[in-house]
Length: 212
Image 1 (cartoon, rainbow, N blue to C red):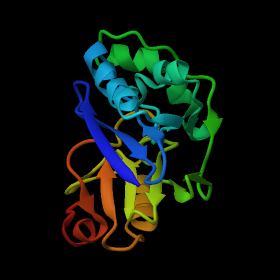
Image 2: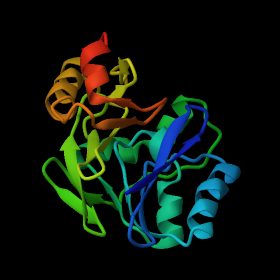
Image 3: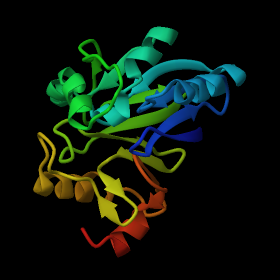
Image 4: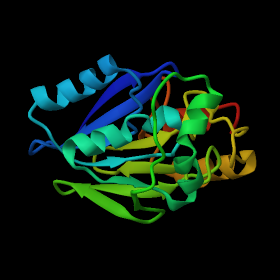
């Protein structure tokens, strides 16, 4: 699996494209683009490389992670996959944008496939395991790629930090429990790909993260 990162929007959100190592198939994770140039950068990468997106995976329904999810789904005829527990956030995307003073047009997302803990997907035979990691949001999900030794964690865990829990539906205790049981239980050399900032590893966060 090849993993490509685009950092977009005023929040420095990481949008990822998962590329199959054996075909042109791909999956987009957390398309948070908020401007035409950001959309063109991601879409340009897809078209220039002849990629065939299969679906959109969402770690959580905060506007900085899904601002372009509906746009991308419409352009390529894709299904959005996310947790049912984030339905209230998905319905509140316009008010989320207003709360942060974002001058963007974003509609509620009310048509998506629900996935949850223990589910699995695949990209040309490479397994993607779905891990529930609530706390930053009620329906937070992480996506573990055991064959690639990587996990996409959204805003649950960062290099030396953890996600904020003061937004609607957040819970500090739940987040710490999620991180310890779902993410830090993975092999130590697993690469942690967060929703903001640089990558880290399970071993490094277990040893050095002051919040854990």
